[in-house]
Image (cartoon, rainbow, N blue to C red; front, side):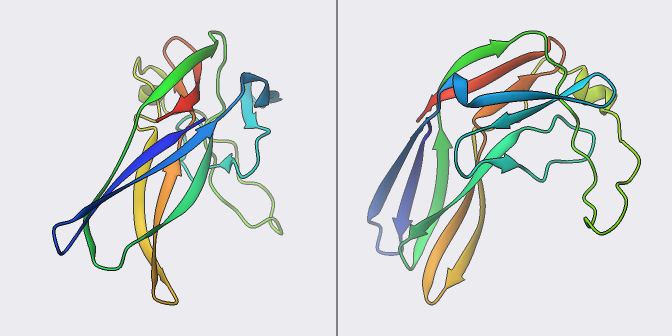
Length: 165
C-alpha cells in the first residue's frame, strides 16, 4: 500500500535510499457508528491503530514503523507519494478523544474542532511523518508514522492510499 522513501546521507557524503512498499485494499477499511452522528474508521490490516491525534481533529488509523538507519547518518528525510482512491463522500469521521486510563470512566465526549471540520484540505496533510530516532543496543531506528487514510472534512470525503510510494 505504501512506499516510503528514506534518503540517508552519512557523514562521509555517501547516500543511501531505502524504499518500503505497502499496499492496502479498500475492503480492509471498516466503519462503525460513534456518538453524535460520527463514524469510526478502522483498518482491518495488521499493525494499524488509531493514532494519537490532537483532540477534536478527525481520528483516523495510522501505522508506526521503525526503519534501521546507518550509524552516523545525517540529513535523513522521509517522503511519500500515493495513488489514492476516494472511498466515501458522506462520512463524518469521529474526532480524536482525550486519552484516559481504562480503569477510569471515559471523559465527556469532545466534538470536532469547527475549523478542522470546515477544512477543504486532506487531513492528515502528510502521508508519512518522520519522527524521532531511537537507539536500541547501538542501532539507530527512525520512527515513521504512515497515514494511509486521509479525510476532507468540508466535503466529508475519505481517501485511501492503495499504493503509497
